[in-house]
Length: 59
Image (cartoon, rainbow, N blue to C red; front, top):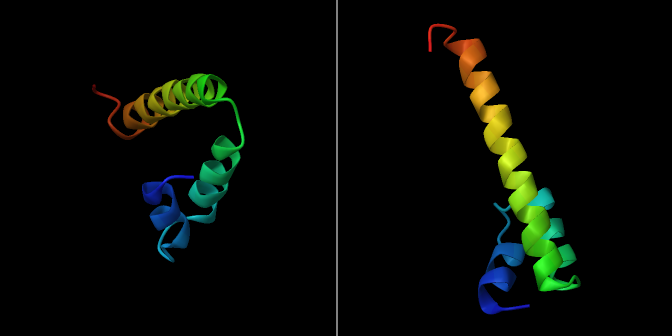
């Protein structure tokens, strides 16, 4: 684990989800972790677009 990761893990304002995710990726193959993170990012972007359309149906 690098210094930035340790700072986030020790920061009381960091969410449990983020801390657990950092701990998990430190034990995984870096390529696998990166691929899965990119998939999660794409899903979150899609969800965000859908929510924006629901809030602003004109767009």
